[in-house]
Amino acid sequence: MPKLATIVDVAPRLRRKEISPVELTRDCLDRIEKLNPTLNAFITVTAEAALEQARAAEAEIARGQWRGPLHGIPIALKDLIDTAGTRTTAASQLLEHRVPSEDAEVVRRLRRAGAVILGKNNLHEFAYGGSSLVSFFGDTHNPRNTAHIAGGSSGGSAAAVAAGLCYASIGTDTAGSVREPAALCGCVGLKPTYGRVSARGVIPLSWSLDHVGPLTACVADAAIVLQAIAGYDPRDLSSANAPVVDYVSGLTHGPKNLRIGIPRTYFYDDLDEEVAATVERALVVIASCRNGPGWPAGRVVEGPALGAVERSGESQPDSVLVAEIKEVQLDVSTDRTVQGAESYAYHAENVARIPELYQPETLRRIRSGEKFSAAEYIQRRRELDEARRRIQAMFAEVDLLITPTIPIPAPAIADLKKDPAALRPAELMLLRNTRPFNVWGLPAISVPCGFTKSGLPIGLQIAGPPWREDWVLGLAYAYEQTTK
Image 1 (cartoon, rainbow, N blue to C red):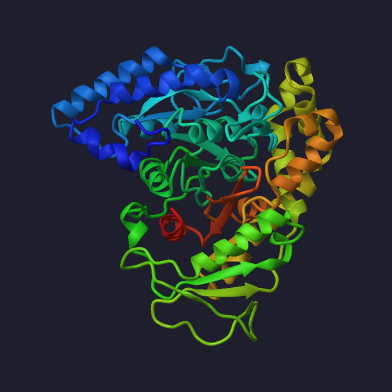
Image 2 (cartoon, rainbow, N blue to C red):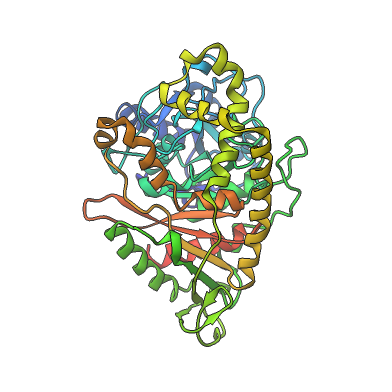
């Protein structure tokens, strides 16, 4: 079995009975046993339950009852996603022994698709950070270089996928917590449109900003997982009743005359030199990539301003227009107020009653939300709604936006630990380019686009208008195939 085999590779072989779900599951469990002591990507491994699920999947497939491409595929879950009968801790001593009685909606859908659940991934405690260095269960390490962080808060999920411990993991993303660790570990991380995937049964950081999405080894796998978990959940107040398209077939059947916006201001400021150079090379590739009948070849054009976009000439048939966006309106204080106030509201009772069960840094961050008044929260929440409406005007000029996922490569763990005061500023920098897309609620993906000279991964972020995960996935797939 290849070290980083993909769902899209093994699913047809499972259906043809060339390999067994039990074989795949045992392979993953062996790799977890070997590598998890170093990576600390899993908090809980449900080996016996996983093998039982794998045997059940094998029997169903043998009877011709194949459920789809996730049937018999071993996956993992971030450990703030409820699993009936298996503890869900949010990486906190507060919930060390908490065992939910009901699956989260996303878990229910994965089980329905036939996925095999290996266990629960480590994370930054209660998802309140971007390093995964604050966890009751210890630090998560980057599989590319274990001296460096895996990112967060879905650090264990990204590390597990990048190291081949599972074929996919489900994470959550409030300010970049799927895309940032995916970029730092060198895998794919997708944040769908706000409301596309149910968050019911997921321990919240911020109800207004939380998104649930997959981390995978390749773009096609992300499309497969999204297909299984997307859709309306009438029991989730944040869930939207928007049509779900065929994300898998959409990978090779995208729109003609694709227009790509490059928002230089803010997103391209103060980049690490290697990140900047790698992303510029990726933009050149994207402007000329071709994959399938719907995803066209393209060219870079530039010139006089047209509204918020600078470009010259008109897009030719089957071309990709790469345009310079001069300005994107952004107020980063809006989401921090909303996140802080909502997080404090969720934790207030336990913070007052048993604060010693939180990690000190998590407790400090949660308590920072106490200062916001009801009036200030209401105002900022209205501003967030306004921002989500306003950003849609951007897509009158362009179809997709491209930025670096992270401005810098993964920091060394030792550098962040030697000065505790440096941790939060470093995390804010790491999440700088991902955070706005949570405010806007837009679908966004991080795909690997290269490495630093020292071998640390670099990620490219592609974002699109609401509900156009198919466009985001399609361009990411075309780029991935061109650069494979």
